[in-house]
Amino acid sequence: MKNLVQVKHPGVLLLEELTKQGMKQKELAVRTGVSEKHISTIVNGTKDISVSFAHKLDIALGQSSGTWLKHQSDYDLYNAKLEEENGISSDELSILKQLKEIVDFFLEKGFMHNHCGDSEKVLQLRKLLCVNSLTAIPNITYSAAYRTQMNNNTAVDVYILFAWQRMCELLTDSYKVELPFENSKLENLLPNIKREMFTEDPNEMIGNLKRIFSKCGVAFDVVHHFKGAPTQGMIKKTSDGKVVLCLTIRGKKADSFWFSLFHEVGHLMNGDIDARFVDFDSLKGTREEAADHFARDTLIDPVKYKQLISTGRYQQLDTIKRFSDYVGVPYWITIGRLQSDGWLEWSRFANEAPKYGWA
Image 1 (spheres, rainbow, N blue to C red):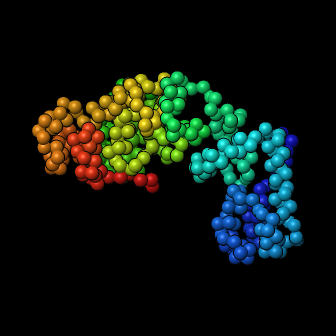
Image 2: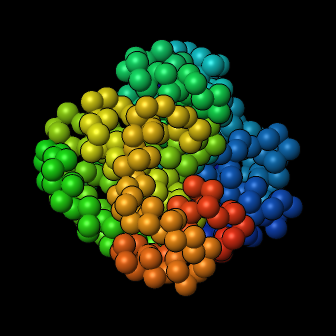
Image 3: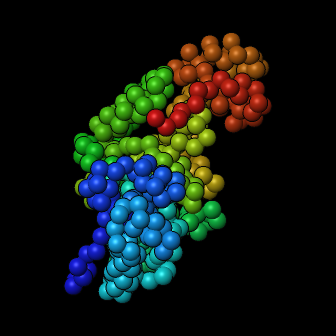
């Protein structure tokens, strides 16, 4: 916006007028015969003012005919010039709509601001994602391993995945960690991480994990997942030697969460941090198998596990609980392992594992 004087969205002007008149949005909704949500979406800048509603506003607010239609017309003209001056294409506006769910999250977290139209949101998103055009996203160069992961997963939306990764970076950017990352320190902290499986409050548990991981150079967080980014987690090494490790909660089962966490730790221990590494739900390969083995053997000692199987009593809950105490894990971790390995039906003890939800 080199020469353009910014024109406020009509919703901003409407909020100012309501404040000036001391009128609540609820009262305006009654006066104009629309829902409160209708008023709210206009005030938030996510909805424009139609011709018919502009006329209703003129009457309800005691203003001259055409006042609100002119506000909308001025803003539409500003947007048209904005798009032309900044080269905002219809393709970028379509991508913005495609990213609606994650854009809403950016707005909620304060990474972007509302009270503006789509063209201004495109400009915000460009800056946030560090691209001069949203259309460039599919052409950004990644490592060969990452490209293989992405291309082999038909459920991936490249724009949503790119924005999701940026979200992970933004959420962990301010986390203080001991630099640089050292896998030897991480190895020493594995017992501390395992003990958090017994913490009942998931929010307390996540906070504790953040502190533990920070001691070995890892900025850890549990993040939301979005349709189009079917991921278990992401690992990325930053230029200052910090490692970003983000994990999603999908399905909510605690045993699945902990296996996924140690799977990601396995990637760290196995050196899968030279480039951006995204763990997709459905993808398998040598690296994934190695991380799976690490998770299984770290959670439950493989020799002791074989001994349990050899007894033939792994179908009994009392036996599972005694064994779990013996190897130092919650009993539902053992149940999850037995189910995964086919020794137990998935329906057997299905409700024993706690479920994690978002606070």
